[in-house]
Image (cartoon, rainbow, N blue to C red; front, top):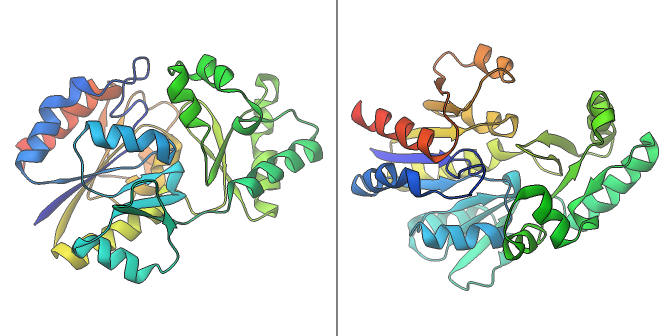
Length: 277
């Protein structure tokens, strides 16, 4: 049986302040020893995840921009299966991988956010209208990484004016009228034109079953935009405080909770699961 782990990044595998994954090294080594697949499932961009994927020494596919795209390696049974089932692909800077696009184009999302902002009389500020310095100040990322965070394909993160937080339902309704949706991440709201992380994860689960046969799935996340894929997992794990996640807690009887966010909690959660297998 193939063990397949799907993991969010910010406040999950990555520390919310330092963006380091080092405190999870013991669990990462344990997964490598079991030849488990580790699939990163994140709101981060392709450019951001590429470097982290390399640091972690991963060869598995990954999901970026909240499920807007899947990156997989060319060749091999898994990559060939994905390419055969999804004819539309995008070339990557790395010729050894390809991108499966699942979302609306970024330019269309930027235009839609401007329209929603005008329609509702709200100042919704997206990454497209921010400088790399502004993104750095908001996220705490180094300037080079903040620039990568603005290299978007399928997802427009935006800020909601604090005094207008009660109008989030109106924003979601306006997006729905345009065939789009708004999902909540750790720091930002995100305007997307696809079905979220759950759809992308389900595509990869099917591919792994075709490639490996029986699989066991573990999922780790911390925020509402992770709920759609956590519900698909045999072992779903929620990191951090659970006060804002009552809907998920009520709908998932098998949900495991780790109060500690970030890589320390991730490390503990994965090692606990592995010790019970």
